[in-house]
Amino acid sequence: MHRSVQRVRYPPFEHYNTEPDKIPLVEVMLESENMPPPEFKLGSENSWMVEWKKEEDGSEQLPIIRTEVTKDVLPFLMRTRNGWYIEPDPIHSLARRMIFPSVVILSVSLILHALEPALIDLLGGFAEIIYSPIRIGPLDYPLLILVSFPIFILPIVARIVANLRDINRQEEYISRPLGSPQMAIGKMSPDCIEILEFMTPNGFTAERCRIQVGVAVPERRAILEATNRKESGQPAPGMSTALPERRVSTADEHGTGVGESLPMTVSRGRILLLEPMRVQDSGPWSSVDSDRMVLKGPDNTWPGSIYSAMIAVHWELVIEGVTDSGMRMKWVRPIIVENSESVYLDDLPVRSGRIEG
Image 1 (cartoon, one colour):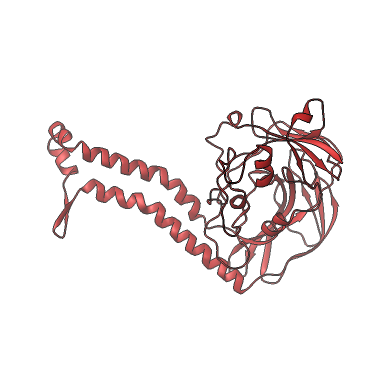
Image 2: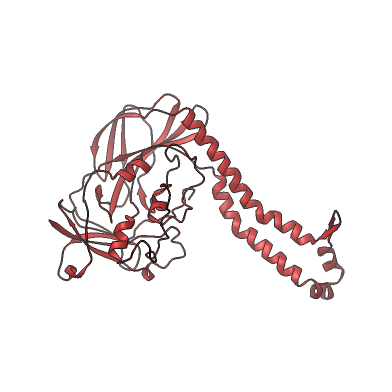
């Protein structure tokens, strides 16, 4: 039985307003029949961090979890990060940016409406013009509210439109699915990957490709066990309660996405929207060549592929392009990258869990 130590402070769904050093660091002693990988530490002690190291003095007091350590891609990643995916409608991102100004406009309008008598006494006729009511049928409505309320609901309407367009694109793909690209992979390392004899399926034109690496969301069971919490009790920091029904996305199953990581998806077939890894780095985009491509890895040095319940370092190949109907899509394939060296990275590259960025 091999023993090693895992230390994780994984970013929550929206990490921008979270102070990492205020979130407890999860530390466990991992027991497995398989050898652990070379030591690596991604991130710093007072920030987001993922570390896998050898057993040392004092670590025998840590909670013990027993799980598989493997270089084979875990089943849930094969289900959620393998195959064809559509690009989410850009209106999703626009709608989210509109929320803050629309709420501010409505709030200011309500405040001004509450101060109407004082402002009329202070500003006189000019204020009366602003507060002039608009008659619709038998009732009078405040002018400011009639102007600000449509602005307030505009992000909601935009989000609905974007979801309907996403559903139409998903239905279009389901009715005419694409085959997988054909390729031969040569050299594979954290620095670069060589692709030979690349061929796209009929109906799809590949435009660019790259490799990316990240750390998947820790398994919910392992986090609860490490923090000595029960499923029926209070969730660990950064988690919500788990969804009781079928899996919608990686984060939903583990209770860390709060149901917001993906736009609306169709209820049949697999998920066609690619959920981002919150810890993710990527190499530069390269143009597609049918004969030979050499894809460079990220600027930072990363560990090779390794999977466990707490820490899963996942590598994948991403190819973007457009179908004959004009729909933008991407094809994702997990890859196994070997690495025999210890890796230390000062800053952990993190991003939002929202698919639209």
